[in-house]
Image: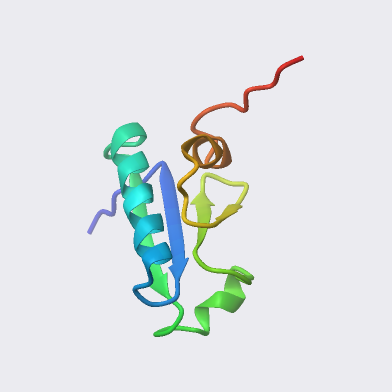
Length: 99
C-alpha cells in the first residue's frame, strides 16, 4: 500500500473542546485550505485523552501547533488567530523585515 507524502505534517495539541481549542482548529483548517490545499495533513491530539503524547513534543501550553514536516520542527502557541504569525511560523510566508 502506497501512502501519500504530504509537504506539511502538522500536529495540533488541544485540551478538550474549549473555545480556544476550537478557534485554533478552525483557524488552522482555514489557513491550510487557503494556502496548502492538498499538501497537508493535520493530526489533532487531545491531551485530556492522550496526555502521554505531550512529552514527545515537549508541550507546555495548549493549544500548540507543531510543524513536524518540513523540518526544522516549529511550534506556535495560542489560538492561531494571528494569520501573519502563523504563516511566517509555518514558513509559508517569509517574515516581513523592514530594514
